[in-house]
Amino acid sequence: MPRVSGLGHLGIFVRDIERMTAFYRDFLGMQVTKQDPEGRMMFLSCDPESVDHEIALMTGRAEDDGPPLIQQISLRVPSLNDLRTFHRNLKDQGFKIDQVVTHLSALGCYFFDPEGNRTEVFWLTGLPSWVMIGIPIAISNGLTPRSWPISSVSGSRRGTCAWVKNPTRLPSRR
Image (cartoon, rainbow, N blue to C red; front, side):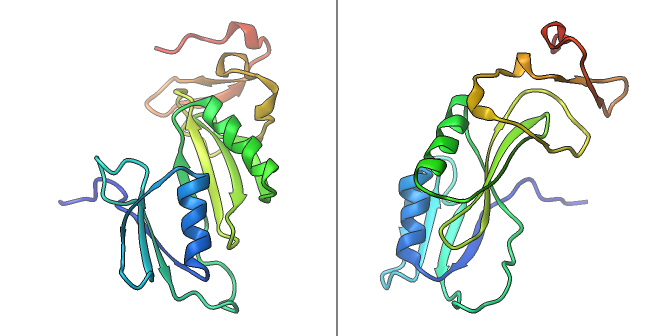
C-alpha cells in the first residue's frame, strides 16, 4: 500500500504578505525561493538546496475571516541554544508567547506570528517518548537535557516516562 513519506509544505492565506514574508525571512531565517510577479505568493525554505519550499504564503485572508484554521506551524531548530535565542528574541520583539514546554522528545516554544497563527519552534532532545506530554519549563535558566528531572524509561517497543528522584543519575541513552 502506498503511503506518504513526509510533509511537503504548508500553505497559508495571509492578510499582509510583506509583513508575513519579513517574519519568516528575517525573524525565522528562512529564504525566499520563489515569488509571483504580482507579489501575491511567496515560497520560503529553511534549506533551499534540499527542498524547494516548506512555507507558501498567499494573499487572500480577510480581516474578518473568523477563528484561525491552523492549529500550529511547527519548525525545528538545530540546537538548544538556537531555541533559547528564539525565545529571547520573541520576548524582546514583543511577540506573544503561548507556552514553553518539554515533550520529553522535544522542547517547544509556542508563540503567535504577526497574524495570530500559533507557531512553534522546537528542538529534538534525543530522548525517546511515546507519551503525549507537555510540561511547562523555563528554557532560559541554563538547564541541559542531562539535568532535567524527567527521564525516558523503556520496557517495550513503546517506552513510558517517569519522574526521576535523582536527576544527576539519569540512565544513559543507548
